[in-house]
Amino acid sequence: MVQTIDRRSFLGASLGFSLTALCGGRAMALATLAESRSRSSRFEEMLRGYVASGALVGVAGSLGYGTGQAQFLADGTIARDSKIPVDADSLFRIMSMSKPVTGMAVMMLIEEGKIGLDQNLADFVPGFANPRVLIDPARSMESRPAKAQITIRHLLTHTSGLGYFSRIEGPLRDAYIELGLVPVRTDGKSLPDVQDFDYANGLAEFAERLATLPLLAVPGTRWTYSMSPDLLGRVIEIASGMAFDAFLEDRIFSPLGMTSTFFTVPKSEAHRMTSLYSIRDGKADVLVDPGPSSVCLEPPPFLFGGAGLLSSPRDYDRFLLMLAGEGAIGATRIMSQETARRAMSNLLPPGVDMSQALVSSEAFGALGSVALSAQPDGKGPGTFGWSGGAGTTAFVDRSQGIRAAGYGQFIPSRALPFLAEIPKAIYEIS
Image (cartoon, rainbow, N blue to C red; front, top):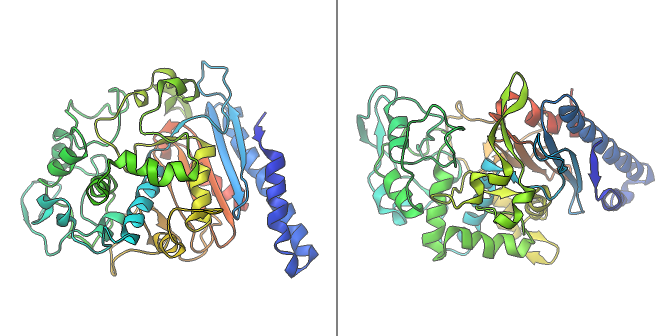
């Protein structure tokens, strides 16, 4: 059976959300309440199906309306050999769902005038003062001077021209790996096609090494999935004068009450860690990283701003709640409404080639996709969010007053339709 956590609180919140529609008539209010219950039921059924079929070991989800409390759903266990049920406080590798967190941190510093949205990256990391672009990335490392500088906007929107080791081929990929520019923790099993390498030791060394390599495209011209979020972690350190993790804790996690979001899971919390599996024959069967002895219980070689965080459904909903509140949860405000809205708007440079984008939405904000119009999966205009490579996804749809997230632990995330089915279940899209 699916565990439904805080159902009474959720229904109360749904009722409160519905009553705000009373100005439009009692029928509208009742329809909204009925719709919220229907969404919840469909989401439950979808999650239950993945565990009942054996495709996934354990799953979780959250669904909230407006700035009310969320409902948390869960089914299954934290590992195939465990009897501990998944719940709202289980810890998941959210991987690329780290990106919007890093993006919001940058926007906070932009609000304070410590970073400029269109400021030259070289002002923070001088090694990028003279960027070069590959002439034929698939065949050689031959390069020419870039016609533009990398800016903070470019880093926030994956238009910097930087690459990502698992998304590129040829000699540049080999160079990324050789220099230890691999922002994933591995015990050797999750990256079987990668030769031995030594990680960059800390964000400063990471940034310096990355600056020695040529780009895939002229900055501001093409969307290329990249390590720019990780590089922004270093920019945050320089601009704030604080370690990246300390900044996130002091300015985001602590104020928002996010007590279960970590770069390194404390060993005292290992009992909450889910296990990570790879997919075989349509099921999460091959154990990649066991929860109780996870590599995530040890500090990473450098803080991966693009993929390094672990969090619980309850904790990450606090972040989504802040986004839904446009920078605030109740009286606690971590950024201005204007900054929050700007972060969740289209920040792409004009004329960018989006043919290689990993998302179908038309725009991109502060390290998250932005929908400019109603989407085929039901999301409304202005929806902001992102997904993680280990089977997690989250979004805030302010136009329809919905925030939601789903959590599985499997790689590769494209091996199952789990992520795509979450919004479709919530919006009842066939």
